[in-house]
Length: 156
Ligand code: SF4
Image (cartoon, rainbow, N blue to C red; front, side, top):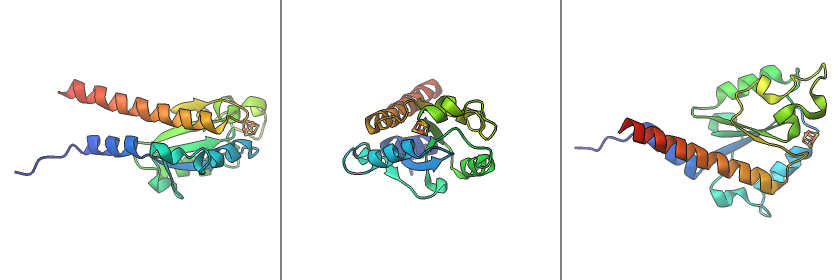
């Protein structure tokens, strides 16, 4: 008899062994975005940890978001988030995305990213170094793996 495959476990295993990441500029000055690009390219090489850049949110497990979330971008940010498959994680990269930073009380932004999206992890810095971005993603993967293991043990 064919062994039943635990679909959730399969998804979590795939996600934590090789998360598909996307990058979304939610109104940043481009400083954080340049650091994300550096983290993805061979010098810092986030692919060492299995993370692979994707071109569409429909293929992303993790979305690296920069900027405080401008009012103009808000509906698009929400729509892109809805397009991501479950389970999905939003990472706020940089101080603007994490806290609003200098844009906190400006009329044209939503203040900070978690006023728009459910943010899972915050990587502060203006901008954060590529090592910090990689560290944040690796910690997120580790936590997701531990969370899945704990849920599995509870179910047994
Ligand atoms: S945190 Fe700094 S580098 Fe990043 S988007 Fe804001 S102002 Fe630019």
